Length: 202
View 1: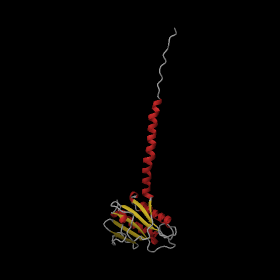
View 2: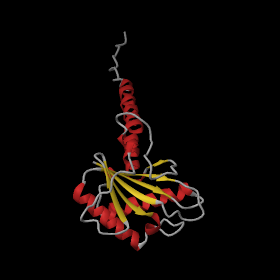
View 3: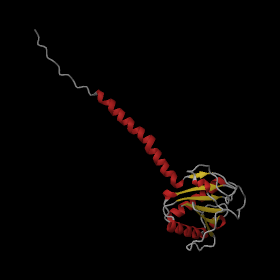
View 4: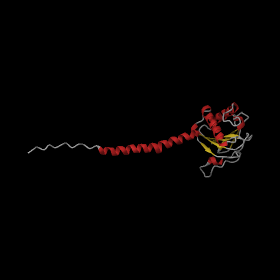
């Protein structure tokens, strides 16, 4: 009678593929749904904008209601304020218990239909940036701009970005606290009443 030899049972490791696949799927899901989302939100803080149109930049800003929406209650007709460090005649300051509003005429900051900053505009922005650093270094800041072009949205956004980038790189303002809101007003010529408003939330 022939002897029967028992074959050793081969280890079956195929079941290990299932948890491995689950782990890899979880990593991919986290990357797509959390990491990328946070990365996108962080990026829009610097260069993002809140698009909108407001043909009355000197009135009260209306951007919604509710106790958390303090930015929606900016009063551009707040009382004039004098800061010793602001000596540029083209820069004005207004304030109330919630906000400080630095303003400069758009014609002194940009040439017609341009988004490049003029030397005169840079001088005014230098004083504004220094004042904010001195008094409100960790405060949130919004730049409100209105264009003077027949293509208002694009130019207004480019101008607001130019101001934001200049203040970040030259006045060393914290880009994490700086956003912009551009205002649009179709026109073929510059409006002498158009202003760039840099608003600081106390």
